[in-house]
Length: 470
Image (cartoon, rainbow, N blue to C red; front, side, top):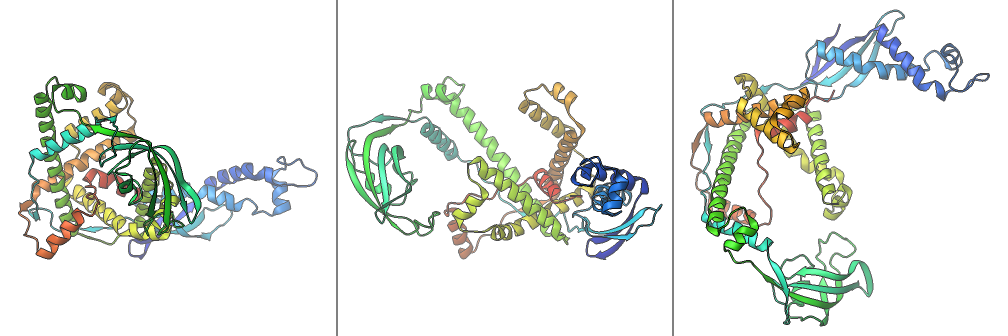
């Protein structure tokens, strides 16, 4: 029998029993796990009877391990009995009573899922303006495709911006070579900005076979602190100069990069795809704007452990993404001159907002009894089947309950997104003040892409990581 007592905001103390039978089973497991660690004169190691060990080392020799084995099952049963949604690990675990022949009574403090005070989410006005489709997007895509399919030919002339040069170089600082400062047959696309500022500009004008000394200064914020702000000398030799030749936008180009025979067919199909993509992005922007407004209008007191868990989840994701690029998180922190504590502090506001978004969306979903749309479930299953190279029938036959629940949950949040959009009233954004317009323009040219727009399904998945841990 479990009981609960509120001891703080979204924090309770749960009191429950560890049945004698469960504790005895755990005690046997603890003995078998640890018996090989003890030595008693006259007995082989690992073969000392339990009663002998307890007489020799004390009756409570296995108690701690026994308790640690028994506690999780008893705790989980108590949580289930009280129908609690716990969002933290148990803390302040205390032994209340332990009488022979009686269940052990224990208390533990835990945080539970907070209640959400929903604001208005029907009929609310949301500022939104769709981004008009532009034919320039088509031209830009074609230009980028031509760039990707460019070829390079050797030329007997001085290198110019846009050319590709192959070069050898050796670098030194204060007369000493430094790590990474020497290379042979290095490829450099002039104008790419991939080398230290000033390096590429001094290569322009050199021809194959020529050598030159280049003086460059490492940036003050260079990731290698021992080189930051230092003057470096590079001795370079150009092996070859290659001119970039773009393919002509004609039928042959279309045949090389697509399934179409003519350039007109290729361009028509590309236009339709980009128009559809623009529409999808507009829908995502509208959905994001509506969700942001709904979340802003609601209130919830988020337990700190939920935010902590979300921060850890983001750190894991960041670690994975960096590893994919061959960089460790520690090395990244060294590059940017930060620490783990500083990074966690930077991530915390965003983590808090993500958790709040999930809690609010979940509250709306439950209040409106939003169910997954059959077509969404079917479409998602088809996508998963394709990834696993199975037919939809094969996939459905083999799907496990956990994966099915995951798909249906994501589909439910897709339906929730459409519901919220259907309830909103869009209005044209107010004209930006001159200062705001200047700030927006500065941000747009600062070299940072837009923040990733998050769908309700993605928010659901993330916040579940910040939810029940027990």
